[in-house]
Length: 280
Image (cartoon, rainbow, N blue to C red; front, side, top):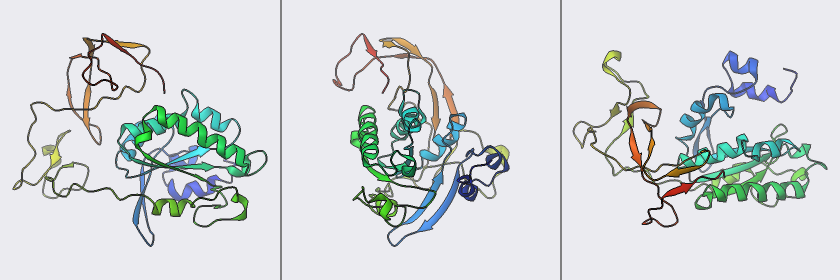
């Protein structure tokens, strides 16, 4: 594809279609071990044509690593209203990822190279964007890197003396290990190998659980958080919406019409006539 940097993408992108197009299409799992953690990398596609696969991968994350193009024009396109950098950050928040490492990649391509002012500009712009989508509730760190040469990935090099913080590996060390709900009943969506069960017996929306300890049952109702990612204007009280209710993995459960009562995150008890949806 006449891009030398794509040599490394072939390490992760094994499918022929991915190698021919130079983009990640499906998620892939890769493991590595550090002195502190045993890590699983979920390589998720960034292209919007495969956003469903990205959602499936991101929904399983303890920490998101957001790769930011630091080049002139590349960063501005990614952080724009319809940019993929902005969209990926919003999706991570929507999927309840509480930790994020923002890697400012291609720092060798800034003018001049490894320009601190460019790094500071990216940090300011991305931080402002994340606050608008409530990432102020999320632990976020920024790491400048030059991925092709490995600068600041596992060791510091003189090229990036502008930066005094941890490299990417040490940033991973600083991730807070989430508390697992081990005291809760077992609930696993059916996305793994099951022995002695016929394929025709499994349906979309099935959840695996322990039949002897509070097994999964049908729910008459549930409480959910709804995040509106993109809407052309205001949503009026009593307006009709069509929810497509899914568990992680996008197994279809139910589809129904419900009245929509407008609410506000600023005043939980208020019941306004409408809410105005603005772009982050």
